[in-house]
Image (cartoon, rainbow, N blue to C red):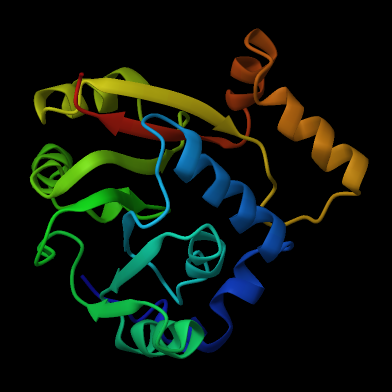
Length: 208
């Protein structure tokens, strides 16, 4: 897989990719901890396709350990600078990387479509993830039923989906942003909104 599209953006990836980086990534970090089996202080999060490790700060602030993996050498270098020795950054392909020891949680954001084979990728991740896999899923790009079926075959049969209503490219006034976050739990309205915009965060874990 070529990283030429991302290499030149490495030095300012997080700041340019998100209109409100701190708010967006903090909300994502909150859901990583709370969605599905809860993470505890000291747990390790393996962030596949981590980019410049923008997610590291909010997770480290929660007392979690962070390992970031990215295939782009400039991104991995930018990530290493960002974490400043507080976390481990690895240059590797998300399809092939296996940590030296199991991790509590594996995340993969805006990158599951880089899996050479989705089912094989889920099985690979399930082999070293003790508690849960968390990733984003655009229901207009992939059939949710198909993705859930692959997770179950991979042994990750307990699946929770949570709408993620935080605009990536637009900074909203605080009241509107709060209203959108509240709408994530609105049931039918949330499902209707997902037909035209936004994505799910998915937590997949073993039953029991």
